[in-house]
Amino acid sequence: MSELNLNGLTNSNSSVATKKATVLALGKAFPDNVLLQEKLVDGFLRETNSEDPVMREKLERLCKNTTVKRRFTVMSKEILDKYPELATEGTPTLKQRLEIANPAVVDMAAAAAGACLAEWGRPASEITHLVYVSSSELRLPGGDLHLAARLGLRSDVGRVVLYYLGCYGGVTGLRVAKDLAENNPGGRVLLVTSETTIIGFRPPNMSRPYDLVGAALFGDGAAAVILGSDPIPTIEKPFLELHTAVQKFIPETQNVIDGRMSEEGINFKLGRELPRVIEENIEGFCRGLMSKTGVKEFNDLFWTVHPGGPAILNRLESCLGLKSEKLTSSRQALMDYGNVSSNTVFYVMDYMREELKKEGAEEWGLVLAFGPGVTFEGILARRI
Image (cartoon, rainbow, N blue to C red; front, top):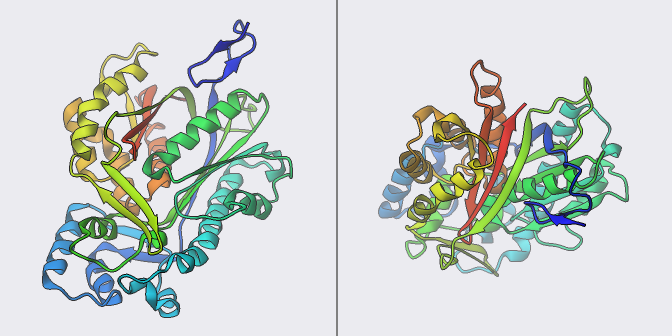
């Protein structure tokens, strides 16, 4: 008789325990253009021909409040010289944006995957499954096929594409990759996320205040991890074991994060109530994941949290009573890279794995992200 496991997949023999997926390697990559926060306001307003003093003051305040110090971006002077219409209000530019974004996303994905494969130390031909996550490209066939060809993956590699999930897409991809690894013994799953803000770049307009938040907060980049449920001793070096994985949407909050594609690219509206929605629902969500362990206190866990912004991290820290150091990796990733949508949780994970090497590091922790829906994604993880 088969039974339904926690991730919605059936185990044909319930008497045989499924080996848990482990994270075997991690890689990241960024475009060449570095954007220092201290120089953003002058550059952004100059490139978009916007010199409204009220707009300048608001953007300066936002840049300071985000805590971001540095980001990476595909956008460049060369791109704006070639496509000046990107900085012109009301101009249909979706075709131009995709001409830039589609190849850029795969370039970054290939670089991150290459770094991950190098750390793993085994040939790309041993990858059995590919999970590809992006909210920044749009075409058929998708970037998954272009990436598989670029990396030299075998032609029968099992491909899964997750498009337009936004900031929780990285943890969704991790959940899907976990299921694939656990239900395909001996398999190796490559999960790649890649994002660029080109698809939403536009000149500032006071009627669209969230555009300024995006200009002050978001960046570009890619990340990759490899998962397997049966690591080979002395050859592979797992650092996290993934246990329970849960996704939950909060009813009647679908308009809190609202993204619409148009001829001018993608437009976002972010409700002020987002930190409150997270605060009101996060404790029960986390306790549900913790119930699978003997851990009772939030401060006895490690926290790998997607840093959507400082307000979300501050609310999380306050409502759960977390010690300030619990979100250090999230705050560091936000400072160094900005919010890079689905990728960012893996930049946090990269910092966290160094923290977990220290004496006295916690055994259990949570991997969390939030995004449109409002959707919560969470995975209970164990340090190896």
